[in-house]
Image (tube, rainbow, N blue to C red):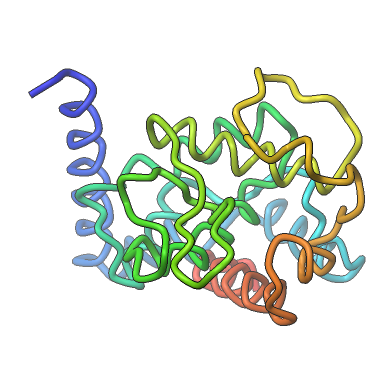
Length: 215
């Protein structure tokens, strides 16, 4: 087994151990997952009240454990993908993209990592980039970090005209009219033809914040 594969499996095993331990102790789970600090709770409430909860450029506010909990409750294979919360937080922070939104978009696009649509797991395409339906599978990426980086760059292309920080890996970046969708609600008809695309992602985002005890 190659070292890279071992590390990925190891991260998944650790993630499952953490979430399982929380699930077995309801008091501890409540403390860690449903009782964020007052400052973080206030931050979410402020975003909701000011209509900024769906702003693509910004900071995510959830922890890795909270993201893992969302996956676990939706029966995602954590033994394979337990490292995704870490990668999303790292890659999104570099480009200034809200990792909560990017992560919830991934949950929608992959069916919580079940990959029951046109895109297959081996493509490492967590944003459905280039998958336009009718069996068209879209783009493929060398590994999961590069695939996530491409999704983050694709989101940034829509959300702002600011330059990328990391080298370009999104093959469709140049096809986007920059800065035309700074809000999640403006991705419908652009990222996907589904008129309810943004609402579906927002529903997952709200569920994530509810599980995390923000409201």
